[in-house]
Length: 301
Image (spheres, rainbow, N blue to C red):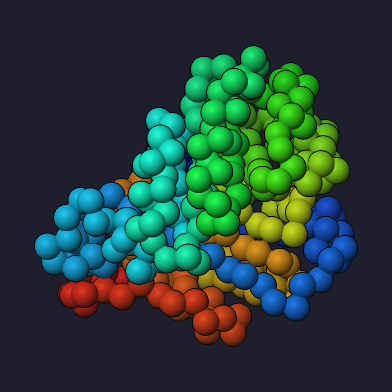
């Protein structure tokens, strides 16, 4: 993911401290307290050839990448659907390549969000959800990123589209236009999301700190973390996230979805392992970390 990329010299001057939880977040977490918190950690892609010999066994073929990925992680932030809507048969093939507990979290297609810009997109939306039904009970949250040019003046369009979606699917909204984070605008959109049970995507990336907004509108958190090639700040940022998730867990959050990105996705598994190890240590969780077949390939701080 290139969103929010800055040059390395800038990294040490950025304030990466996570904002405090908002009053809305505290209220939402208090409304329903869950005894057990589910935490899902994954990457954005599985088709990475450089993972062969690292987290995929030597000799793994492209067609077997998903099966190999699913042995290492319990979910995928499924960006591929954004670029091209697959066939029913393709999704059945993917679903049959993984275990029954593996979860797919796809992104709305670019035809809906960037070409149609959420207008007159009912046909494309129907096609999307018809295909997604093939995931059956392995479909997780579906996330909607309106075109970055769609700011607060497009509130009605976004609200109308979200209200048109089936209630049976959990939808999370990612906002990139900077004007959404002006207080009066953020209050309006996040209040709408809370009232209509739409989740919010928290995007933690270096060059757009406003997108790490800490506004939870449901009892689930959906985090897209963008690292910088295993720079030292990647680890300190992860440390902060571990403590925030621990706090949410203590407050009874139901689920956390944490998806790891890098500007070079080659190193996403290393950060996932670090995150999972720290979550298990600090939060008393038992998430299975990825196994590196050649420890010399495990590049950590």
